[in-house]
Image (cartoon, rainbow, N blue to C red; front, side):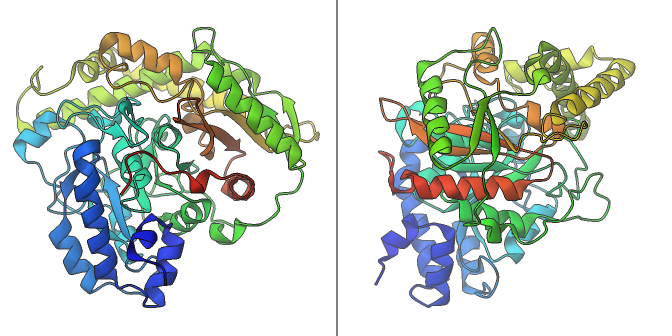
Length: 482
């Protein structure tokens, strides 16, 4: 019989089977998850708001027939609000005020209706504004593979909690790489869904020009697919909605994708970008594996993908959004938020955003729409020839950085140089997945990204499951593990 400890290290799909077979009860599995958090969280600082008592009550009443009935999970402390519970978004002023969410998000309702038992909320950088999880409000989250290194951001707390074996599923969201980068740096599967696939209601319609989307980080492709099946779908008033899957995404696991045409980006995208030998090695190994599996690979990427124009325009959108967010909170609290409330990088972005006029913002949105069409045509050419099925790139340039390297003004420049490959697909709205296909010579995980045509998560799941079967990533365990 499988031990409780083995089940905690298993993926959610295996946990569901054990729960339904009554090998373990929801309360017993929850207790194992709580004990695991208590063992590893002092080393990682990944879970910042415990809800153990509430979770114990919910576990006693969970519906075992629900898709994930009785499976413990964590949610990121950025969006996915739970009524009456802390929601600080990495911000000191919200922590100091003891702010609590006034209502459930639709996403929290879907997790709950799916049978998940939420054990707590996880660490995140302030307002998700960077790719490392080191907020002044709660301190740095540490990588379970090496605690001197970053977990990535902004879903770093969720990624560390999953990678360390406390839970099988962690809620995450992504506005420029915030699902994929933590998945890469913690050795997990991280799928950014298509625009509109998951509702942000009821409080949010869109953010960052529709670039942000919710999803999860997991240890297996089949878990990722099944979770997205649960949380996908239109809610009343959503400004965007992706077309439904032709069949449940979970049924794409194990489907032979056939011989795909895959473009490979095997060098830095930007002249100012980091060119790390481990990154080149990760792409070389993946290219060889794809060829062995029968796919047609060629060095190619959308010409518009690496234009500096994109970076400049996306910066305008993000900074304008940050200025708007700060203004909303200042109105809520009835005072100006100063240096003791907001981190310097956040303040800098907000100040930049305040210089953007309405006409400049609308012009930027229009330019990004035109740029997006030029990128997406690479997958869907208009001349009748076959487009590419997938683009393969690094997820991030280099292994997980040391804690502190991405902090402050110099850290922001380093983050920009490392983050060359992900934010573009938040703007185009395409699905993209990071897979743990490489480990550095000193044992740190490095993800490889695959980008699909619009709304083709099915192809991503098929290729991801095929690569998962051909490798041994599921057998690896970090140094800090429950």
